[in-house]
Amino acid sequence: EYRPAALLPTGTSAPVTLGGASPAPAMRDEQLKMMSLLVFTFQNAAFVLLMRWSKVLDTHYNSTVAVFLTEVLKLPLSVLLLMYEKRSVSEACATLNREILGAPMDTLKI
Image 1 (tube, rainbow, N blue to C red):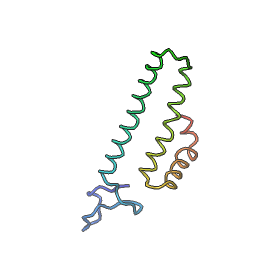
Image 2 (tube, rainbow, N blue to C red):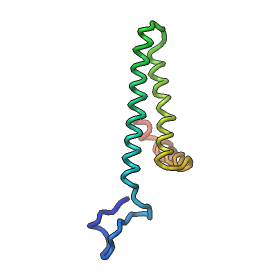
Image 3 (tube, rainbow, N blue to C red):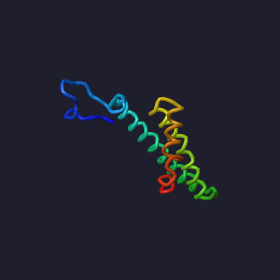
Image 4 (cartoon, rainbow, N blue to C red):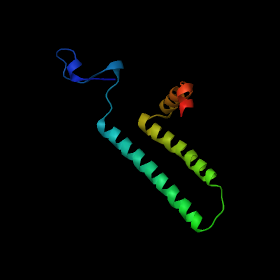
């Protein structure tokens, strides 16, 4: 957790973090936000266009299955973005374990 400059010990000019972690670079955070926005915007736009195109071609399928498959595709995209954010597969797995399996009541709320 980042400690504001007003709470820095006397004579300290560098940012201090709790727990020994360094603050995340703002540029990397902005890149991750932009990448997430672009990936999921493209995915949702492609879904809508493909659904309309398939209706024009008069193909027969269950729309519920199409929506389900779109949601299933979001899982690997989300995991890839998490691995990019954490810069490690093992750290991403640990985060998934902690946030999903470690908090079952919060997971059920979704």
